[in-house]
Length: 119
Image 1 (spheres, rainbow, N blue to C red):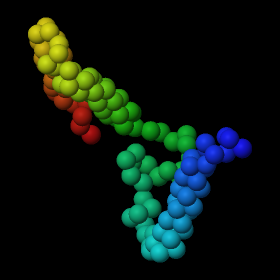
Image 2: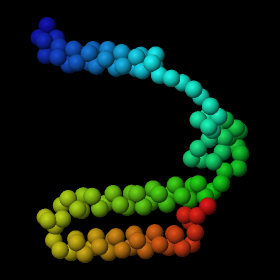
Image 3: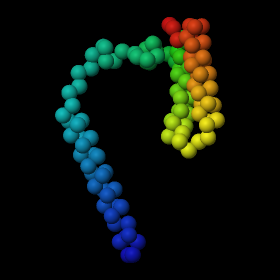
Image 4: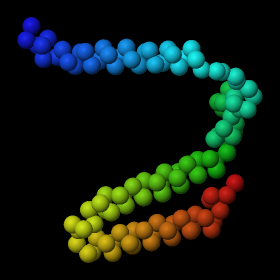
């Protein structure tokens, strides 16, 4: 009985949140207007119809752009913790991050020059 008293607020919160989420979902489902047309149902992002055979030829440029995006996106994530802790770091960290940003820019310019970002 003691455990029920400790977990009662959590169970009450869980029950209320589930009830509220089902209520909001149900109301939005009943009130939403749905007018599907060919433009809304057309393929996007990947350039082919998603309901065709999965063994169709796929353009490799989509993979190259995705890999380049991930590469530059992950590299720029390193800038945020550096910028937050910059006042606590020694001066060598400032210059090493400038070198990192310079190399990132050089890599981006190289990818742009060889045409990796063009269709």
